[in-house]
Image (tube, rainbow, N blue to C red; front, side, top):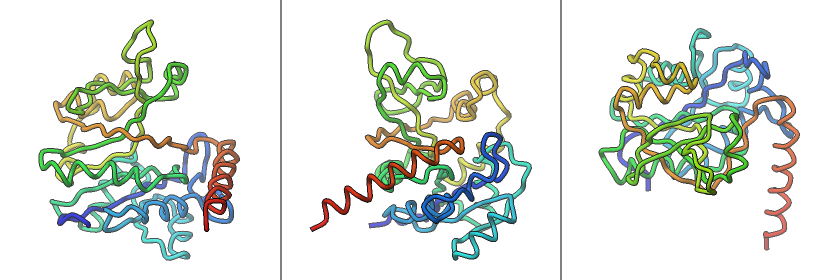
Length: 254
């Protein structure tokens, strides 16, 4: 059952990626990447609406041609969160809406991850921002390409870093941050009013702006692994996983 308030998924799709220009249009088994993300997001049982937010006419036209709801946003945004806020304004999202920032480079997105992200809003009116994390092994945790998070017993984020946190010579549990967020609309607007913070500048992680402003982020654990596309070379791995999943589903079918 869907909750009473409106829950909107917005997929930011910027054309000018530094490492992979035109990434949202990358062909994956006959579909542009943004279509895979959109179709996966539609399977989330809690979302009332899913739209694409782009800054490029090529992506905009491609989405319209396959009847995916899309809005054109500014090319000047510094982050996907800024683009999501503009898109929410364009569609006149109500103040009591919950806005989900769905990464546009996650063609293997598991719909259950969005359900997990949104469940705290259904059960706790005090939750205003959520994000996801997963357990990772110590070798993974050493990579600066994986953002780590530590959180309190109640699930509130304490800190995010590209470095190993918490630091220990022992084999203790670590958690990787998965960069999907859900905001109550008024908190998404509030985020946009905050200046870039000191820790954000040091770590290059915009979510630290919220923590420095004493705005809690609720961390939800998931068992699912994120398979983002950062470079063209990542496409081959995504296709391999998609084909394996399809084969397994066929095998399990009666």
